[in-house]
Image (tube, rainbow, N blue to C red; front, side, top):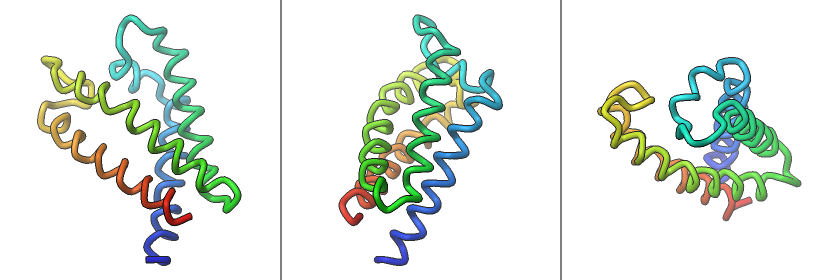
Amino acid sequence: MNTFLFVLKIVFGIFFSYAGIMHFVKPQFFKHFIPDFLPKLAVNYVFGSIELILGVALFFPQTVNKAAAGIFILMLFFLPIHIWDLTKERPAIGSKKLAIIRIPLQFLLLYLSYLIYTHS
């Protein structure tokens, strides 16, 4: 389990850091995921910053626990947005099939972040 958790922290750290950076590099990609009543660019940059900070924090023993808890909360926060996206005629993710697949993946991310949290 220790090797698995070590690799999981690295994979999550890279994944969330990369996702956070992409919010700044390609903000247009994320605008369709953000509901129209919110300020899209500001929301994009805020959540990109959060993802980047949490991703980097997974690489440090002093902050890995808090980062894993933060990722868990972030994934919970994103879940309704992904469900909302599924209800759209043309989901932002690109297709209904991908929107459907993303929902169970969200639960997997929740579970894996919980594992990191409980074993760090």
